[in-house]
Length: 201
Image (cartoon, rainbow, N blue to C red; front, side, top):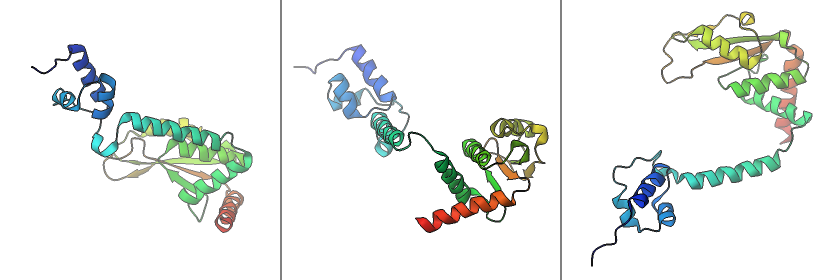
């Protein structure tokens, strides 16, 4: 008695599911075919990642959905006090400890940092923004990018800090440095909050 044949539609489904990153077990549950038969049709089929190391897309998606649900319940709204904690912790981790001076490549971090600075009284015109970039980057493109993130006009930015070397393997827009004119009072306030967090935890 010969082996049971499966339809071309089912074979196409097996290949499609594998390309989406599903494991053999997950495919078996979807198409109701034995593992050995599934494996036969998957030779040479590429997947978006190595399932042996990272698990299936479906499992990862479930974990992300669960984590986002928990996070949403933990952080429903952010109060003014909590924004001060965000400012202090951002600066504690990334800022200069001798003067109000923070440099980072993450645009969201820079955007949130500036937004929190506004909460303590810093005005947009008091921001001193500059970029650090590699010599083969397009300075206009880099400055335009950080101008949109910071809200500081390209013409108001300080002179760019050009690093020797190529950007291969490095960030496309370099790094953004944020300082504040006459920042002594603001710096002392932020570092005082950092000290309170450090001593209270």
